[in-house]
Image (cartoon, rainbow, N blue to C red; front, side, top):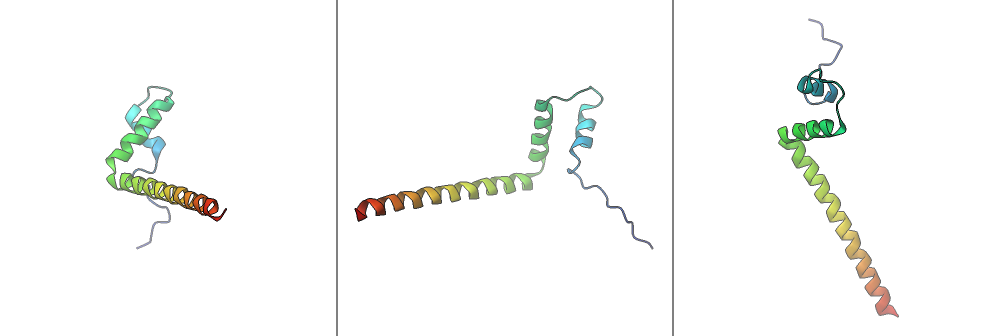
Amino acid sequence: MSKSTHSQPQPGLDDEADDTEVLGKKGVRSATDIQRLKLEKLLKNPVSLILIFSCVLCFLVDVLDLIIMLHVCDMLIALSR
């Protein structure tokens, strides 16, 4: 048995092919159509949604930490005067 040298396409990775299947041959897609299709794909895969949500949440926590640190530094500078 020989192993295949080409890789099989993974589902959800070929946006243009999936978009064409959904929209058919209606012509040029608008940016709204493309974004709507991308959102629909995300909604079909809850793991992606959880990953995106957790990344956004981590970013917000980091931003809040920086804001708190800046506020504490300002307070320390004001107290040292």
